[in-house]
Amino acid sequence: MTTIPALRGESAFIRFPERAIPGVDTIGISEHAQQQLEKACAGNGVILLAGPPDSGKKTLAYALLQKRCGPHSSVAAIERTPSPEVDAVVQYRTKDVIGLDVNALVRAVLRTSSDVLYVEDPADAETLERLCQAAIGPRLVIASFSEATDAIDALAVASATIRPALAARAITTSVGVRLLRLLCNDCKTPDPSDRTGLAAAQAGTIYRAAGCAACNDTGYRGRTAIVQVVPVNENMRSAIVSNGIRAAAAEEGMPTMQQVAMEKVTAGITSIDEVLRTTPT
Image (cartoon, rainbow, N blue to C red; front, side, top):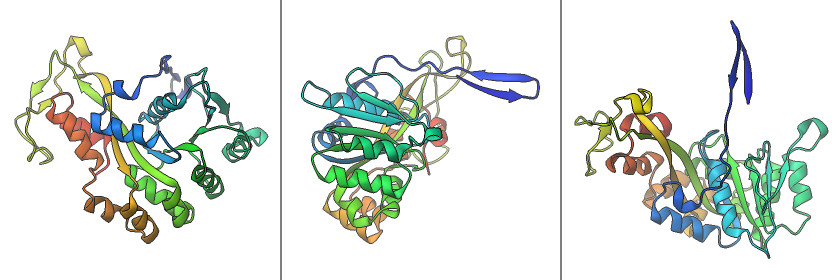
């Protein structure tokens, strides 16, 4: 719950977190992306998750952690606000006022036998370097970056924060995450004009939001996830070291966030306006 003083009283915002953790196959991402993520979380290394707050990073992180939970695995998470509570994951909450920040908790947890570690916003170079060094060994590390706009930007942030050679060796996959609102099936309307040119080369009927009683006149009901998965292959590792990440991703044919989101538009489940609202240009 968040309360904010206003001119005439106080505003209160209540967020109801999901109690059940969805699986990777239930959050709306493509089968190809699911396969890429399952391959990434099967071994060791660092998986980067990029996106602003409330973009679905934590939901995706816990969906991936579930795949490594088991009687012979030790899974830990370091967060500012652990949510949801998960029995199979040892969850640690940062408390900066007593010196228990992300860096201190990472140092402590890495001295334990944790096989898998999720860290929310490891901002400083020392923390990220420790995580990368740990992931070169037998550990899987999932790190989220709220300041990074997409998967390519997360790689650029990591390589600018620590030694590029270490980042190239440790990071196996970078993932951009967003949540898109779903069009209301009761009132969505065909949108014959491609106002942006984004869908010009793609088949499918494009719809726009209208609004009705079923969706409280918003035109949208429910949300779905989109993920931009960038596997770090040999070409990408060289690009990280040489600071040519975005050019290498284009050369590899890796999709942008908008291109991934447009698949939802041509499937008729969201609108171009929603894509432009949520994805970086």
